[in-house]
Image 1: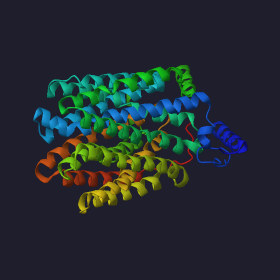
Image 2 (image 1 turned 60 degrees about the vertical axis):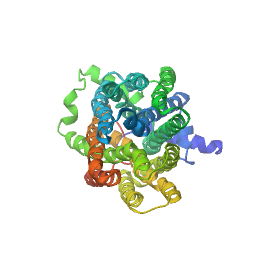
Image 3 (image 1 turned 180 degrees about the vertical axis):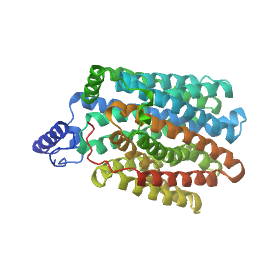
Image 4 (image 1 turned 45 degrees about the vertical axis):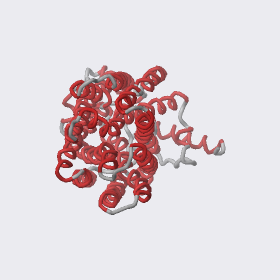
Amino acid sequence: MPPAADVDSSRADLAANRAADGPARAPLRAPATPFAWFRALSRVEKITFWSCYGGVALDAMDLRIFSFLMPALMKAWHVSPAQVGFLGSAALYAAAAGGWITGLLGDWFGRVKAMQFTIVIYSLFTFLSGFATSYDQLFVCRTIQGFGFGGEITAGVVLMAEIVGDRSRGKAVGCLQSGVAAGWALAAIIASLALACLPEWVAWRAVFWSGIAPGLLLIAIRRYVDEPEIYKEQREQAITHAARMKIHDIFRPGVARTTFLTTLLALGVQSSGLGISTWLPAYLTMSRHLSHGAVGLYVIVLTAGAFAGYIASAYLADARGRRPNFLFYVTGSLLTLLAYLCLPMPPWLLLVAGVPLGFFSQGLYGGMGTFFSELFPTAVRASGTSFAYSAGRLGAASGVAFVGVLAHGYGIGPALLAVCLLSYVLVLVATLLLPETRGRGLR
């Protein structure tokens, strides 16, 4: 435990930061300890953080659980990799539409209400997916489920960014996004246990059924979460001046360039990240000939690296800046993926290599939420951020499906590598064209 004076100092820094949240703010000292920013939060703000963290983790669990079931579904329903790839893409296409709509709801009605809406949809239809008796039924369930989980992470990121001061925003939002790694690890554990302990014909159904309980818990917890003050102030001003946010505001002059470049960045980050998380279990099973249980272990190791990558990204973004952080991670992602897919490795070395692969390829997400929240003004922060995430996810959905198409002729490894290389080029271009925002106030 840090001395009380350290925590008091951190609280004073955070209060001064919020009071001076504009272009003319006084210099602030950095928090005395790595997690002093969290200790300085109020009880309600801590509940808000864990509520958002749980939503992000459950979102990631429901999304990535499908990747572990792809081999079982191909066997059960005698479908091709391309058909299973389209199942994965259906959820991502719907998530693109659902994410933007959730962002609009977040700007119109509040960040918390938008998050409640998303979690009801994706928890319910993850559960219903377990009752599907045909490819078409599962396709419908996955599509509607995707509509729900498309907006959860963006609503949570914006909410957290608005309750934390400028000095700690990168750490808070980056740590929040580490919930993606936690959810992925939970998906690996649940899927591996089910596939190892249950008959295959019922195991994949049980995995889908597992998605309902955490969703009900989060709905109950979020009754204690309130809207951030900065959002309330903006809404009061909008009502006073009859200036309700319009759908096309993110395409107006002064914002349109930001919308385009953040979408390009989100496309690159998500095409590579979702491509790896969706196809890696199938690659390990079909190309490396590992068992279902072994694949679960390999993915858990990779998610451990991803978790470390998210946390490191959170602190590097505040320490070095948003743009240098992206450049560091995209370079590391390129090198580690090339080594993982192209170098001959014995099983033990492939297991170890999952740590740096997860660290860089998934940690690349870590700086995105903070960066986007600082680039968009409050009136369109949720809709702008969610549009960038969602449009990027729409393109990423095509990338996931394209891996399946290419895999038919070239194998999963080369197909995945080709899509990821193109994605990293997009990340580099967008990063170099966007401005640095470290320390920028949200008002």
